[in-house]
Each structure stands twice: as structure tokens, then as C-alpha cells.
Image (cartoon, rainbow, N blue to C red; front, top):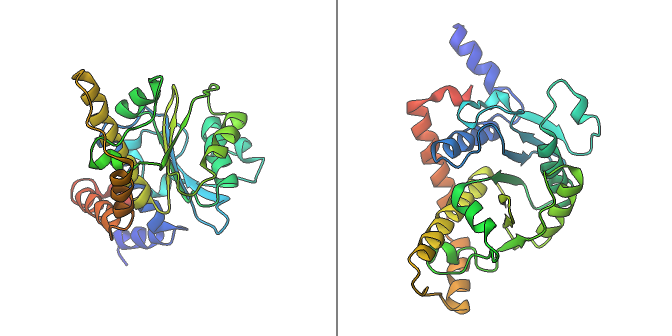
Length: 255
């Protein structure tokens, strides 16, 4: 057996290999889209039934360099996690650990300080009005945390997790901080994060014009949001295409 084939077999035998590949792709595309924050911010993905065990990026590694094998397997109920040799960032443990312990439906969690979502989070009113199709997707499906309490260590993480109790709410605009998105899979969550940033960009640039906004009615906004939720396979196809591009341009992400 060739060394290359042996290495490939070793990699594909990693626990949760396909999930790792999906996450590695999401990290690298987030960097390509300039939605990362230096070597900060974190994504996580639950891999057991109750969500307490999850994959997460290693401490302070640039999103553009993360590979499938780099991802840490974390137990949200293990108090010794932070003392291990591959301990995650304490703020990642505080925020993601709390969500995976307390919000069982949050299978995947993505937190970024992307430019336009963070501008939105800096406004006195950080709600996203339904002014176009993208923003309508989030009608009644995002919550604003207006009580920033500093870096997301354990106490702050526990407080934030309580705002995601309603399964309908998939996005938390973290006031004075950034945005956190949850979903069922990496594809579902990344797609939602991508569209929220696009929607926030449209809204912020519309405000720049100083002209009145054409806001959709509640009825139409809810209709558009429901239709998007029922739209078949779009998120999965989106991630599949992104992996195909990486497979051509930087296949090392699968290692």
C-alpha cells in the first residue's frame, strides 16, 4: 500500500471524519469571505445525542489553515477540559460549552464578528427589519442580546445560552459584540450565517442612503421565512459546492 493511500485511510478513520471535513470547509470559507476575526471566534458541532460532546477549532489557529484533523473533541460536562494539553480558548469553552449543555437543538454553533452583523449589533436598535428577501428569512427568527457583559467566559456564556431556548430562534445578535448562529448541521448553520451577513449588509447600506425604507408586511415576511425553511436542499448544495472548490484549490483542508 502506498504511503499516500495509507495516510488517506488513517484520516478517514478519524472519529466523525465527514463532520470534520464539513467544519474545516466552513472555517476556510469564512476566512475567504472576510468574516473571521484574526485568530479568534469559534465554530462547534455536536456529535452525540444530547449535544454535550462537540467538535471545535483549536485555540488561536487561523480559520484559513484549519484542517479536519485539527478539530478538538470537547465534552461540555468535563470540568477538566481547560486543564488539558489541547485546551480550547476559555471564551470558546464558556460560550459554546454553555450552549451545547443547555440548548439541545443547537447542534452546530457559529460565532463571528463579521463586519455588517457587528455594525448591526452596535446600533441602539439591533433588530433586522424585513426590507428584502434575505432579511425576511430572519423575521421572528432572531433575538437581540442587549446586555453585553464582557468576554464570553462561563457566566456570560450561560446567560447568552438562555436566549436560545425557543427552537424557532436561530440567530442571536450579540449587542456590542457580533453574531451567533445555530443550526442542525454545518451546512444549515453556515448557510444561515452567510445569509444573515448579506442581509445585514443590505440593511446597513440602505440606512446609508438616508431615504425611507420599504419594509415588508409581517404577513409577507413570515411567508418568505417559512418558504425558505421549506426550500429543499439549498444549504446542503451550498456547502457541497464550497467543498468542491476547495477540493480543486486547497484539498489539504480534508487532512
